[in-house]
Length: 328
Image (cartoon, rainbow, N blue to C red):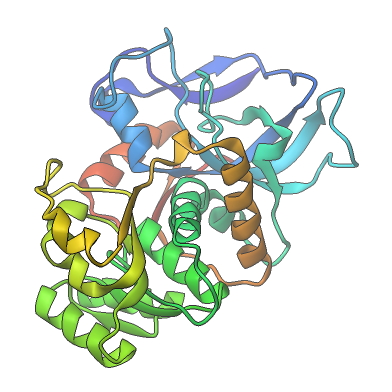
């Protein structure tokens, strides 16, 4: 048997998540069992638990998409000597009821990536959703070495990962961040320039860095908040990939300003990305991880039995860095 944090109804994290025992899962032919050492909490975990993403699909849910640990068992068709291999896990809770907030988790072998000895379990558990979102957003821009990339929200989880990945790809990075602490985090991730998220300041810095040409690509945290001015930030034939629009979910688009500059706008919903693009994003994240481009940022760590409070902190604590559930 194993211990796992789970909920049987939706609501506030500390009110509905409890610790229970479940049988240790057994792998299917193409799956592995990972003994979880750390689980990284994401906003999407909280949104599913709260009901924001719709009603529960199962009688009980063990939350958690992202984790790190060691492989304890292989499915019959899994190739290689992978038992005891250190891995970071992504999409653990996709399409199933039993995610990563547990002592053991079952995932497809492709979702358990080698965790280099240079990376901690907490860093491995921090990747998953934010790093994949950042990687796919950058790939949508067909980003090349030497490109100037604007990354809004560079102090957040996705934005910070995007800064690190863009630097790994050889780009010149201009990031925005609100507080002094977030601006410092963006710089530590590798941003070449960091400015406050004020339209005039962004435009001034872009003009200075690109000689008035604009950035080749923009990775955006809040399309509704930036759509009025973003057309002027991006170069002709450039692109925008946005993974959020919290300030205005239904923004008005002045299409002519974008159309006549031939600017393309992409939405980023990482769970809906085609498999081949997910694997390409995984490869990009893995390469950057092996080259030590990611900076570990841990806001707070909770034990498994306090997973509900970890969800509360993720939602209300405005964490600077990743919220981690330490399992073992």
